[in-house]
Length: 376
Ligand SMILES: *Cc1c(COP(=O)(O)O)cnc(C)c1O
Image 1: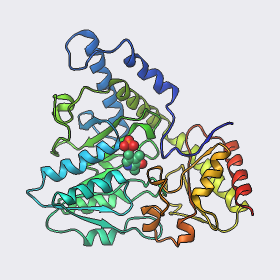
Image 2 (image 1 turned 135 degrees about the horizontal axis):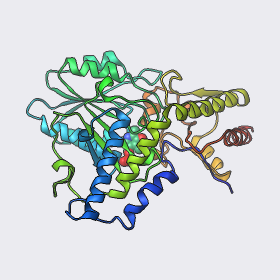
Image 3 (image 1 turned 90 degrees about the vertical axis):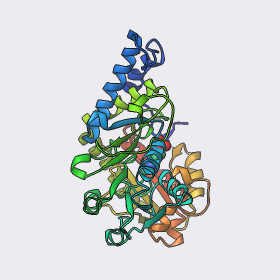
Image 4 (image 1 turned 60 degrees about the vertical axis):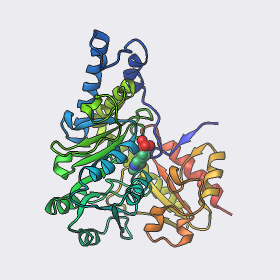
């Protein structure tokens, strides 16, 4: 059976150009970048080239990029690193109710360590309540962490507004951009971002590599102790091949961004239009105005999401309810709960996330299947 993959927010396949770029570093270019001979220097140079490519995608300087093992590590390093480096100034952190578990569970951990966390609500469109965020700022607030784009409903947060509020109050601002990087334009400078997390496997690079941007001049406590890699901020012999892959994926993303956004938007809009025409009693979750190009989160009233996903799987269709990380559990996701959905909508929501390998024919097949399954 042909597989139709509509779960690009969970992970993406590796692009062939990316594989080709990383392959030499899995074979003949095996030098340890910290050594001094020529094959080591080749590996070192490749890492520095990748650092430049990652920096360019988000408008940062290469020396502001630290390679990590994943988006979750970047989030952990950002939150714990800033919290511990600033604990003498205060112990209050502000985040939102719709963050990825990499943020929420890190905050949970920090709260066990004596930090105080405020979780800001979202409105019915899936956008952070800015007034509530402003009002939750205290004398001892040291960090605000709000995701750039949500992984379930694809809503893009008003990052510039939030960073301005943070700056005015002398608070460090981190954003989890794992879903946004490579999908929408990002400029850390224009958007006023102090720290930013991104991940390889959401943008056609392998799993197990990520990056953290930290603005020059901002100190953070390192997460991993050991050797002096990553300017003494992240120990461990570098995952050279995957770092090269991440660099290449960022380079491709940067060059193709307008075309890519247009393609995903048109697939997404085509899907939504067809669903609206063919299937009654649906609800689109999250605003259509500020939304990732490839995200469609739709509730199909009267059908259970997990049942629908199983039946789609039987037809070769890969999709998610809530997020991949929360699938398997029966309760609606924390994001749909924060949206305030009635249970008939919260329990019937399916996330379709488009990627570079999807076609219009895939969408036709998907909607045909949905029609067949949902019709009594
Ligand atoms: C996938 C994801 C992460 C985690 O990234 P990993 O590389 O899988 O650890 C963090 N935040 C968001 C928003 C994500 O979508």
